[in-house]
Amino acid sequence: MFMTKILFSGSIAVSILETQLFVFSRFRPRPLRCLQTKTPAAEGGYEPHISSTAGTCIFQRSEPRPRHRVLNYPLRKYHLFDKSAVIMMTENEDECDVQICRLMKPDDANIAGNVHGGTILKMIEEAGIIASTRHCNNPAHMNDEYEPSVSALVRVETTDFLQPMFIGEVAELRGKVTYSAPHSVEVQVMVTAENLLKGTKRLTNFATLWYVPMSADEKGKVLPAPPLKCPSKDVEEAGRARYEAQKAERRRIGLGGRPSLLIKSNDFYDDDGSSETLTVSHSRSSLIHLVGPSDCNTYGYASGGVTMKLMDEVAGCVAARHCRTNIVTASMDATNFHKTVRLGSICHLTGRATFTSNRSLEIEVMVDTEYLLAGSDVRERAVHAFFTYVSLGPDGRTQPIPQLKVQTEGEKIRYEEGKLRYEQRKSKRAANKQSKPSTS
Image (cartoon, rainbow, N blue to C red; front, side, top):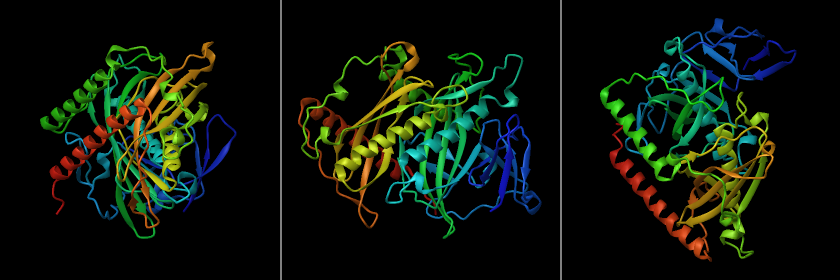
């Protein structure tokens, strides 16, 4: 492994970065001043360049990267749990808009060595925002009315964790813009885990994210999204169907009417004081986080990946308190981001168990924000999501989960609602298995 010294222009700081983060793109970024101890490009390796984002090192190969043998799942075609959402990945890596690789370290995992679901969600969002922002600022789309934009995450479709990822494995994320609406962009991201010792890869995640292009010069201004040329009419129609479906879902929960997001009820934070184990109040967990510069993009807003990582941490605490075993994230339901979180805000995250099946636990997480410089202590709802966790035994296999004890009327209602969502997830997975094409 070679080392690359990076001298950032306009700064006297010199950083030495290991080659653990690689971003492959079809567009060559503007290089800043770069010094290196070796010239791997002459040996058919990577040419390092520095992106405009501080601390991000971008590498491009001087020769095509050889395909790695993939076991368990092909990379050519895979149907998501939403049958209409189909991600197309081929063996030609030039067909993806962004590719990120990162070595998983102990800081990324729990005490059992399983990489946190929040860590993976954060990386997925990083790939998504790079792909969407690059699409919206593609030189081919620039004209006299061009205005630079940065993408803001507004929705994440149901994301399932197909297999766990472990310390020492390399996470490889490949993102591609798959549909562009008048004011929103769809990005699909595929995640694989590479075992360096065995030389194998396996599929771990698929995700679909929706972004809105926001003006980089005028805060709060939504810009038109550049069109995307689809390979066929059928692909375009499928993308439009996904767009209309997520739009209808957001309207169903009230976002279309822009309702007030002020918190008018403390129901989520009520505690009946019960200390009995396996109850909702016993495992309820909270986290308070001050949004700092490291959590934000260059425009002063917290990235969606940071928010999802914090949400997964709270949900993980709830699951660990309830199960008292090694727990891992199984899925995150479709999630809407109601409000942007500004630098200097305090995020109040609270999670509670809502439903248990024989081998899964559903957890509801709320994120409320309080902007310190607003002159008041008013909280606003930023995100609301449902996570599903499973418990793993010593052999790494799923095991039964202790059943949740519901006590109040509200808990009983939420339990029945959770049961309905659980049945819907099972139906989608069953439909996906039936529609999955043969890989032989």
